[in-house]
Length: 155
Figure 1 (cartoon, rainbow, N blue to C red):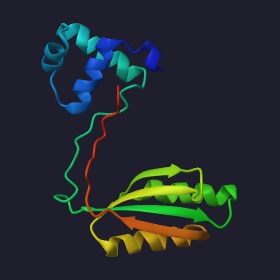
Figure 2 (cartoon, helix red, strand yellow; figure 1 turned 30 degrees about the vertical axis):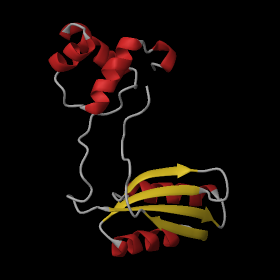
Figure 3 (cartoon, rainbow, N blue to C red; figure 1 turned 90 degrees about the horizontal axis):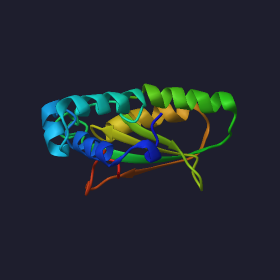
């Protein structure tokens, strides 16, 4: 797997272009990074094979697809039995509304980011969560305004 140490400046420029527009043609990427099309294609293939590029996706406007409500849910479990943790992970992976799920340090065990239509949709997810495992605390924060949204990683 390619690590930061094995990715050179040209690879970083290619990755920056692809993070901006994954649908860019090889010719366009090659021109922007000042490399031949064949060399650019080979580097992209190597980055994919190494797992540095994990997917190429279309980013959608949440409001236009009916998922304009962003909710951050902090979860504190009442118990940490391995089977309960796995049940929770399976449930969250099955939820299309769940776009990010992290195990955390600190006061809460997990942070879940949801993209939903509205508060009613959140209530459905909330009920699934509390039926899955025993919770000590569940706190939801609804985003009032998204000031920055990106999937681009710093290179």
